[in-house]
Each structure stands twice: as structure tokens, then as C-alpha cells.
Length: 203
Image (cartoon, rainbow, N blue to C red; front, side):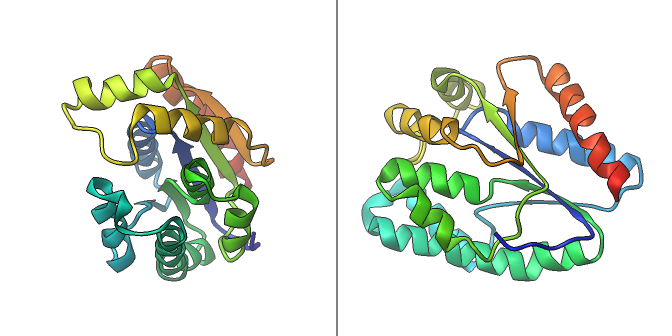
């Protein structure tokens, strides 16, 4: 992965329904209250390629696995060039909901080689910290269907998410910190604050 310095890149990863988006929003609020320049962003983005990816949520079979990966890579390249690199160069802290670890896990679970997927992301800045949320897949599915009242999309089927969870479990990147997402929102939030404090002090 590409190297850069000045700002911080903290990414929130994990299977659907693990609460990572909730924790990202909580952390964003804390950093803003402290006067720390922070950008909250996500992948897929709301750009052209991100919209094409979102269209697959209801009909994933419209494209091949390779075409699907191409869309994720194109979306990330645009995200890196227009948002991530400029913000990092300006010393900002970026909180990103999903990044290339999700691509490795989700497209790897679909049948592509994880090492190949990683090689396609060589342009992407390496995270300073990846918070990898894990909870039983059944818990995540229940949160999506019962708590949110949503219907599972083509990327959220329970059998598929089991394979995604296994891909995440097998990752051993040095910047990963695993989060037990079965605990209370407050407990997780406090853990994250403790984790990022040394990073913030290094800026």
C-alpha cells in the first residue's frame, strides 16, 4: 500500500450490523468537540462508481465478479484522489466507513483471490488504524432486520456473511485492532477513544 504522512486515516471495518457506523459517528462528534480537523467518509462513495455499486445491492448478478471488483477499485481510486490524499496532506484525521479490507473480505468470500484483491489496491494509502468489528453474524442480521427494519440486500445474506466473517478473521495486517462488537455501545466507544489517543498525540 502507498505511504504518506501528515494526517491520520482510521478505517472502520467488519460485517454488516456490527455497529461500526454508529461508532464512527460517535468518534466524529468527539473529535469535532475537541477542535480536531476531522472528515467522516465512506465506501462505496456517493460518486458515479459508488452509485453503480449500490445498484448491485438488489441485483448483484448483473455483473461478473471481476467487473464488480473493477467498480470497487474505480470508486476507491476516485475517493483516494479527491478526498483521502488531499485531507491527509492537510493534516486532517479521516474516519472512513469501509475501505479495502472490506473489498478483500466481501469479494474474497464471493470467490476472488484475496491476495489478488490486495494487489489491485496498491495505490491506496495504508490506514494508521483499522478497527475491525466482530460479532456473531446472526446478531448482525438481527440488527439489520429487526432493529433497523430493513430487508437484507444481496451483500447481507447470512450464509454469505459467514464467509465474509471468515475472511476478516484470517487477516493479520499490523494496523488492525479487533473490536468485540457484542458489548455495549458506550463500552466500545470508550475503548476506541483509548486506542486513538496515542495516534492523536502523534500529530
